[in-house]
Length: 301
Image (tube, rainbow, N blue to C red; front, side, top):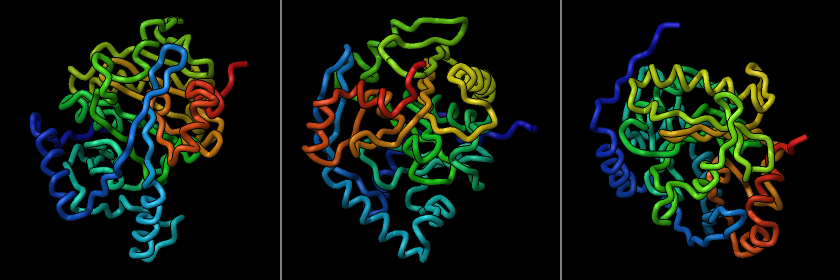
């Protein structure tokens, strides 16, 4: 397959993100969801839990948008076409970056394919090249919710990016950072002793400093190694969460979408939860965030 082309000019992306965020807020295209946050500590991880009391409002807005587009919830695709007021940049000849319309984290981005692809389809060289073109511009977390069970809300293929650090805690890029130093390696693939469920982890050794397609080729090889390590056949559509930073990648197969009505997507495995109300917060405290992750992941045989 011919290598694609990166269209994003170096050194412009972060400025574009900030400019477009201001524009989208001014035009009401961007709906910023207010949150309150609290920390819950378990097994050496200080989980960040955001109470998003207006999630019900978010659902109402999405349903209203679907009606305005004369589409059923099943058929509606907000990415074809995407809202021009949310457009950030052309990343490559295959990918575009837009703002996440209903965001609970500042500068939450969506990296979408120009042509429709299923969200459960395997990630490709083009996907990873577009991701690295973005992450060369700012330090962030990219994640992929493969399928509805893994937390995907749209069928159109999209990676998501959020800037780091994810928490206001000094010195930590991500809540799960303390677990990473205990990674146990089996050749180039590792597991994290703090995660008592099926998963696979690989260091990336600052790949972001290489050209996007060079970095993407190595990342693609690791990706297939991670899929193999967790028992997912490369041509199957299976539910899993993939998390990628400049330094590592983590893949976690999924068994269910929620635990006690608390939804979990890739950010849960980074150490961040979103709950709708105080009742869900108490449920999370009662069971423990790590136990919630264990319940929605795949048990170790």
